[in-house]
Amino acid sequence: MNDSDLINRSDLINRIEADGRGLLDAARDNLDAPVTGCGDWDVRRLVRHMGRVHNTVAVSVARRITEMVPASEFPARPEPGAVMEYATDALEGLLAALAGIDPAEPVWTGTVQRNAAFYFRRMWHETAVHRWDAETAAGQDFIIDGDQGRDGIDELFQLMVPAMLARRPRPLPAGSLHLHRTDGEGEWTLTAEGEQIVVESSHATGDAAVRGPGGAVYLAMWGRVPLSDLQMFGDAAVAQSWVDLSP
Image 1: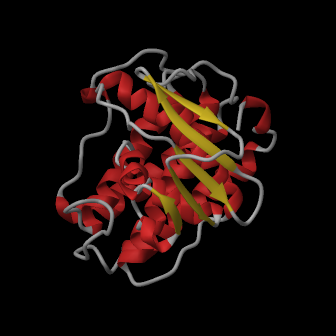
Image 2: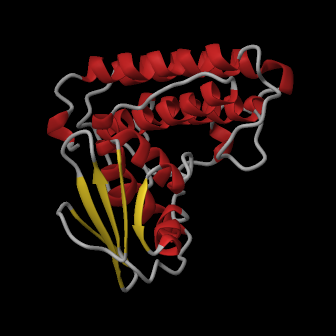
């Protein structure tokens, strides 16, 4: 996705709202449940995190912030008993902020893409993945569709992982990984050249390969779905080393 793809920002706002409310509904009576894929988090911490993220983006977008600002300028974290209200208010603030900005307007993002379009896309994916976390913790099923998964993989390796590596350099995988979406168009070959990740949208043979529906491959790359749940070929350790790069 690039700026020109955001031809219907109201659709993305509606998706963010649906996933945000779905997350809160799944969490409401389940705050003490553990969250698979988020270390030692429980749902309460997940909800607090989602509220903090939505608050931070809402303030950044509403104020048209163009450089990094101190954390003290954002709303304070809530007491444990107030996380639901905190996250609900944060979601409302995010939706209002996105509705009030042109995606092309300059906004600081911490990545090489420095406009509001970044946040439409990031909040779409961030909120969907954490809705998956909340619903899975509640014993429910939430599926990320293949088209969103395809765009999410692009965003992860073209923007999110490079931004993380710029802040916290670390060794890159020694082998290459080929990802193949089976429910529509979408192939990626990931290689490391020096300190840079090279992403090619092509059919190729990697040291490892992972195949599956686009949403499942995306969740696997964020460490939510075990690679063993998908079709995997080649060196499993190489595939896992690419998963381990996720922020």
